[in-house]
Image (cartoon, rainbow, N blue to C red):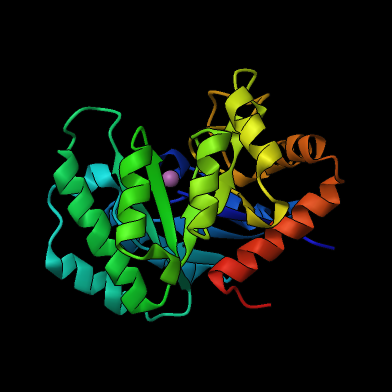
Length: 259
Ligand code: NI
């Protein structure tokens, strides 16, 4: 019996302050086998690592989101590199580019820290968890320039077109798919999902954000992933069990999760 792997969660978020432990302890009996808690700031990295130490089924990704790079230092990079030696750390992320709000921070600054953290991932021997919003061309360019194919990774919360997916497939990347797939206005992602090979798709929540229908707008958590599984099974014309089996195998392969 395969269980769902949530490859992108933020249980360190204050949205889980009141019930974090109870919620995490309820996941396995509800079919969520493992999850990766993803750091977005240095504080988030420390909290993600702590959660991975506390729960055997929680793994950590360490990295700094483009919008949080303003105060980053080389000392922070060294902390990540040292901490990443722990086998519970399975990826560097989330890192990338976000041009949604202009100059927040400036693109050149974002690109510099994106490249720096790709180099870090290669040094640590870990795959990337990539955040990319309204920055498609620059994301592909930095990934190619920095030879991201050497460490691999996932385009988290994939939001670009089916046509663009080809470029990221050619870079050897996986594609993180979550609640947006169930949205009534999610046609672009449904088309991309139909096009993507099943062996490159990972399930993710990005919780507390992006809850699927019928919980859209509410606090998201891994327990809602079956709604994404249902929609992906419909689009790919395979069983829900197959969706869970294949996406969990994909996660095991990319993040070298133990059996
Ligand atoms: Ni995230």
